[in-house]
Image (cartoon, rainbow, N blue to C red; front, side):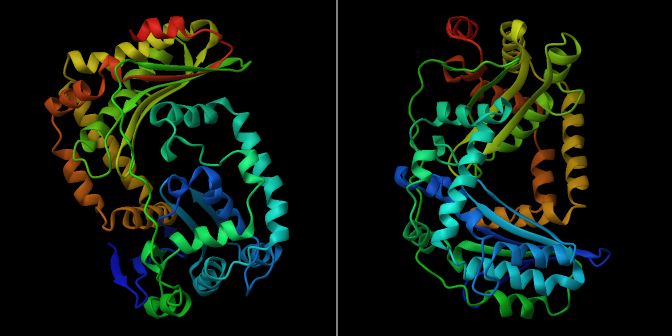
Length: 420
C-alpha cells in the first residue's frame, strides 16, 4: 500500500498512491513534543507549531499563507502531542506542488518574528484558558499529571501562562535546532500522486538539514503502593472523572490484548461501560475506555461525565466492570465482536487521506518502522479470551489505580473508599 524512500539528506519519504481520488494530503511529522522540553521551556513545542503559520521567507505573513491555501480550496492544520508534532495540507491533487512549496517553506524558513511571537503569546494564553474551562478536556491533562507526576509526560502540553510569556526568539531557534532535523522527520503524500512524486519531494524538502537530535529523558517509573486520588474543585453541573492505570508502551506485544479490552469495555453503544453506566442506570451521557501507548509507558483509562448526585454510584459501576474482567473471562462472542469492530474502524478510517498520512507519518517518526494494517490485524486476531483476562489481571490491581475527578467536591474520602 505504501512506498518508502530515503532522500539524500536523510528525510524519509512515504507515498501512498490512491489514483481513484482527486485529492492529496501532504504531511510532515517531526519527532518533537512536550516530553522533549524542560520546565523552563514547557509549552514551546505547541507554541512553535503556531509560529510556523505566521510567515516564512517565501510567504512572509500569516495572511499570505492562509490566502494561498484558501485560494485553492485546500484545508490545513497541525497538531502537537507529547512525542510528535505534524503539519498537513489537504488539497486537490493538481495543487500538490503548491502544498509542498507552502509546507516546506513553513518548516525550513519560518521567520519566527519577535513581533509575531509577542502577539501569539496572547493567543496561546487564551487557548490555554479556553481548554481549562472545558472540564471534559482538562480532566485528561490532570489525569496524566496524577499518573506520571513531575516529569515531562506529566506536564501540561501547553505549558502555563507564566512560562509562555517568558519565551524569547532564541528559545524557539534552539529548540528547532535540537529536533527539526531531516533525520527526525517523515514526509508523507497520500492520494492521487503524480508519477514524479519523488522528484517533487526532493525539490522542496531535500535542503532540510540533518542535525544532531536531542533525546528525551526516559520515563522514571515509581512503585505505587496504593491508589492515587485527586479532586480538582470546580463548580460544574457534571462530574468528569478518569479512572486508570499505567499501561503498555508501543513496543510491548501486550498492547494488542489491551486494545481489545478497551473496545470491550468502552467503545461503541454495546460496550460494557456504555450498557451499565448509561443504558441501564442513566448515570452519564458519555462513557468510554481507551488504551494509549507512549514510547516507554502507557495509560489504560475509563472516562465518564456523570450526574453530580450519582458520581459515587457511577464510579462504583465503572470500577466493578474493570474488576469483572479480572474475575471472569470475556465471552468468545464479545471477543469476536471487538475484533470485527477494530477491523471495521480501520476500513472506514482508511478511506481518509488525512488518517493514512497521520498514521504512516507519526508511526514511522516514532518507531522507525511501519506496522501495516494487515500486520496489526493479524496480531489482533491472535488474541484469545485467556490473553484478555491475563492482561486485565496485570492492569487492574487495586494499588495501581489512579482517579482524577473534576467537580464541586471538597473531600476525597468517598472516592478513596470505593477504590480501597
